Image (cartoon, rainbow, N blue to C red):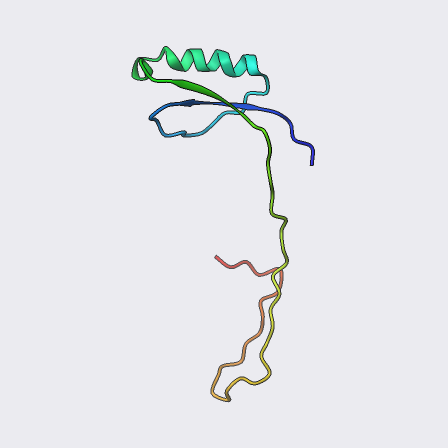
Length: 87
């Protein structure tokens, strides 16, 4: 996996909201300065956070199995096909 470096801005004491990926450090620093100057952010630290690594869990297939020793009063069961979507 090829990681493209990026930076995020975080204003201390605020909800991160919808972070924007800045693909240069300079762009992130410019945004941090803009955020620091907003009236609601005066006196708050604005951090520029850089990505140093990432991880990912690959999709794993879901496997259905039918038990052979089900009680006779159990309704019959057919596993869903891969085209059926469960919500």
